[in-house]
Length: 117
Image 1 (tube, rainbow, N blue to C red):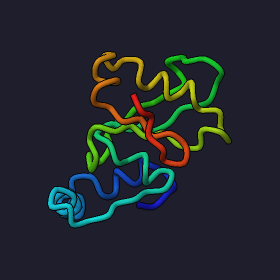
Image 2: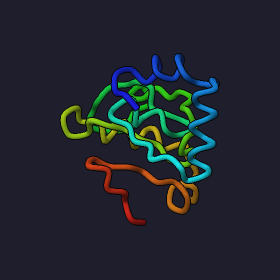
Image 3: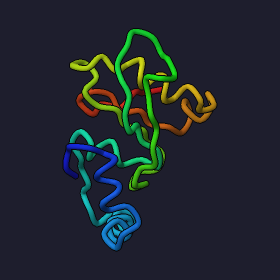
C-alpha cells in the first residue's frame, strides 16, 4: 500500500470490490500485504488519521479515523523518531481498556518490530 495521506487512501478504496478482494485473500493466506507510511496506517480497523507531536500525551495530539480493517487488531503510527510521535501513540491507545492493549492489541514500533508483552 502506498504512502501519502491515509484519509485520501481510505476515501478512495474503502468499501470497494478491491478492499473486499484483499480481505478475502488475507483470510485465505494468499496475499502478502505491506504498507509504507499512510499505507501502513490504514491497515487496522481504526487508524491515526492526523495529529501532531509533543512531549506528553494530550487529546489534541491525535485524530482517529476508520481504517480498512485488513488487520483489524492493530494500530500503526509511523515516523516516530523524525516527528516525535510517541506521545501521539500513547494518546491514541489511552482510551483502550488495559486488558485489550496488553492481551490482544499489537502495537507496531519503528522498524516493524512488535512489542513483546
